[in-house]
Image (cartoon, rainbow, N blue to C red; front, side, top):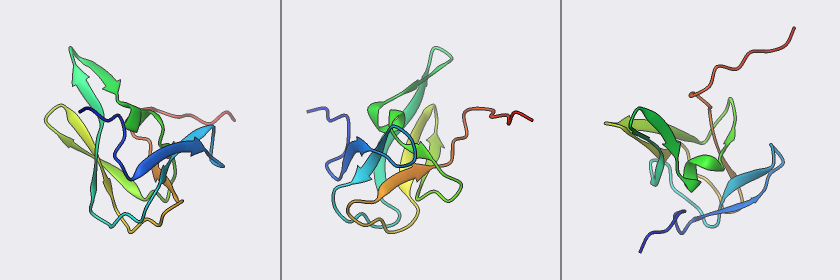
Length: 97
C-alpha cells in the first residue's frame, strides 16, 4: 500500500514557515525517509515528503540523487517532535537590496 509519508513523520504547523515535516518518534542518523523528488519527462516533480520540509542552513536531513530520483536521509539523530529541515538546492534565491 502506498503511503505518502513514512510512519515516523507527520505534517504540522511550523515555526519556520507554514506547514512542516515533524518526527513522530526518534529517528536515527543515516535513515532513509523516502523519495522527495523525481525527474520525469525533463520536469522535476515532488512527492508529499518533498513538498512539506522547510529550509534551514543547519538542516537535519539531506537529499541524495540516485538516477532521476532524490531520496531524503537523516544526517543526525532526530528526536520525536523535532521539525525535519533540509537546505533548499533546487531554486536560486536572490535577496532584495
